[in-house]
Image (cartoon, rainbow, N blue to C red):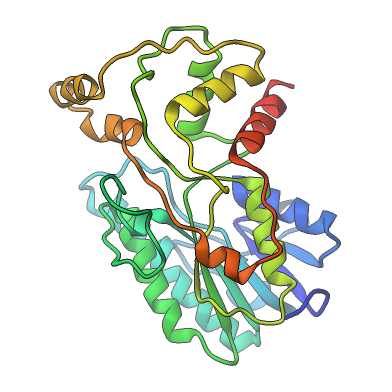
Amino acid sequence: MAEGKGLIAVTGASGFVGAHLCRQLEAARLPVIGITRDGAAGTRCIGDLAGTPNWGECLTGVSTVVHCAALAHQPLSNDAQQRALIYRVNHEAVVELARACVAAGVKRLVFLSTVKVYGESSSSRAPFSEDDVLAPEDDYGRSKVLAEAALAEFSSDDLEIIVLRLPLVYGSGVKANFQKLQRLASSGLPLPFACIRNRRSLLSNDNLVMVVVGLLKQASWSAQVLNVADPEPASVPDLVRWLALAGGARARLIPVPVWCMRGMAALLGRKDTVERLVGDLEISTTRLAVQLPELELGSTEKMVLGCAKNEQN
């Protein structure tokens, strides 16, 4: 579908990514309708993805679906009911969406996946590319791998599908780990991050929108899977400095050896938490540049500073 040839439906339209995407698609004068659990604020009501979603009525008149809805950032455990919910929402409901798209005559589906399909670390190796073997380490990543595999079976001339694998997405209103780091950076407290030299891919909400809009304007997609990230990876010290600067402060970083941080984390049972802080998780966006050669994304530093300043206001 080229620009202007049908309605674009965004699932998860009340969420952090989906709400921003809807606003920006409207600003770009693209015909968009949000799909939410309760149908609030003029969106279409899908109901509970863990139950019986009302896909049929929600897809009336829709040519393209951007599927943002997912269950993430959950405190996963060995609870069978909780784990089943992850797979129900992130895999089985996606299969039902694809079937509904075919039945409703939807022409295109953009599926937001995650870099966690590759695993949790790119340390001691090249950045992950789309052709790498998938090795997720948690139920969220595994559920997304299953969804990707299912969607590959539906991809055809009648339903064009593209999967976008995203790292941590940030922007105004961001929660979770990025928000925690922002609070630390602006606290003025000395932080033991000066020795960290890691590389982690990030993605600004605004850059994500630019990619989605760019794809929607294309007549066809040569790729079926794309890594999407800001132009440059960032280290944790970089992020702290930028976030502090946005608040008019100077980061106070003290040198604590990484091996020491890992040792303390092991003793305290926080190994995974510290590894996400000091380790690498970088993806290659070479294929994205081929798919959208004229795309000019904002630099990581610029986008982080802009996000942090917006949060200050």
